[in-house]
Image (cartoon, rainbow, N blue to C red; front, side):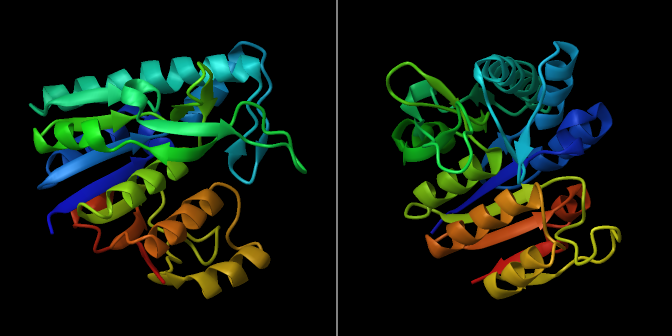
Length: 258
């Protein structure tokens, strides 16, 4: 079965020009078929604050009211997405920028209000791989921003880690999928204050223990929740690492285990 590499890039890697350029250079050098999913939350937060819109987060997930939705659509599908596409084109790679609404790629339903009202946040209900498969087969690199739609004209903000995981699960029947989460840290840290305390192999039991004691928190939670979910649905490998890990074929970083 042919390999498909799906990488979600976020954090400071996306926000800083130098690190983004370094990442894109290494990403472009990955052999075989690939998809790039990106975040851009820090840029969205900065622009929101400049506009006087307060940002609210719960366990790494953004509360998205109508004003915030307008900002994330502009930042994710516009500024960040097209910047990445342009830089890939400069590396002589054919790329196309998409969000979940394009080609009816990813549909979602507005999250039900339970303990927390997340606003216009979408929980993925379906992934349409047909046209995306044609692009990949033609050596086009899809660059996907974390926006979905409900099929009724409403855009929704969906966590980028979730987007990457759902795409990985959807393609697991067609390809041997490697899913990687790339950000500024070397991997999942046993001690959040020690950048060298990387957990090399992490299973769900160890994850639960470290989440309970607070060692693993905030933005790492969506990555791990989605990573373990992907493994259960047939994704071959899930890795969390940084640019250096990417350069070394993801031999460094944290590998998730069932």
